[in-house]
Length: 139
Image 1 (cartoon, rainbow, N blue to C red):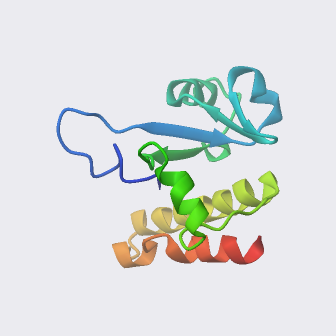
Image 2: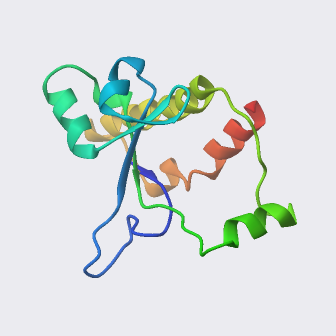
């Protein structure tokens, strides 16, 4: 599970449930997914779970994000125009999804080791910034 943003995210409280987004790069599932950009697709959590249960996909084929980032009308464009908040970059989908899948697989390995008795703390996971910095360096 990845943090997709603070709106309706992991720490959401109240009557509004978390918002889930599921990304993948499987061309063979394009017909049951929404295309984000060439090679990157979005699918519902329910559909992803069903495909895993049916053996048509592996859970590591998907990236689950909880929450999202949101902007008021014109806010994002204003931040882009200032050129001090965002960096626009073109990225090859395999690089983006591949790096995130590698991080996910490593975390899954650490969790498995923790279940075998190894000490595993929140510090072991981190806040995700190092992963994004490594990804940005590869762009």
